[in-house]
Length: 279
Image (cartoon, rainbow, N blue to C red; front, side):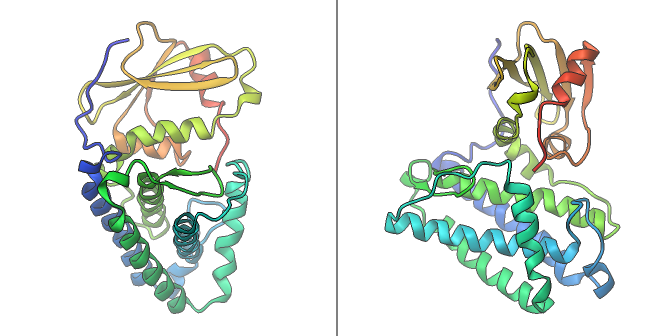
């Protein structure tokens, strides 16, 4: 396996904290401004998420920010945490939570959303640099995570949902290049979280994922013994290769579209694409 040195800022480290927070604020503001500017007809427009209209996207972002504030307080007090619920139930549960805000006046939802995210971003900023990667914050779906992951989850949400909103509102849909490039390493983690081992019986695959936006960046994804692992660097021998620009890679992992240029054994390509459940 050949090594590859990423060109992006490593936002998991203290030196990358300001970059992460800047991008989170930027992508939230993009989403928020679209929600504020939407007409009443657009407020009820269908999004690429089957269960959600535009108004439900606002409800979801509010619900997530509200939960994250609670997670930080829970961690500050050292209160007990429940067993992680896992990501299988995540999509349906959050789909329902978002729709519960349909009974709240639109402008109140947006007022709550801006207030909650303002406070949440201050939590991100107040994490000391030496605790950015070391402080664990509870998360009811995946379990305790380093503080930087709380910001990363929000950046995933805002960046991909900005694409959703653009699609729903009839705009040119894209994911910001800097944000999506920053998210590339996290997308492999999401891929691992959404891996469905029960459909991987007997599957033995080595996949080369080539991120074309950052030059010659390669990652090795291996599926073996009903588990998925990943590491930076190109494999010596790959069953298949998927080449993506970074923004398309994010949308592919989130299953918004089937992106990338696939090459290699067609059975391996088809088999790999069937190994993930949707959130």
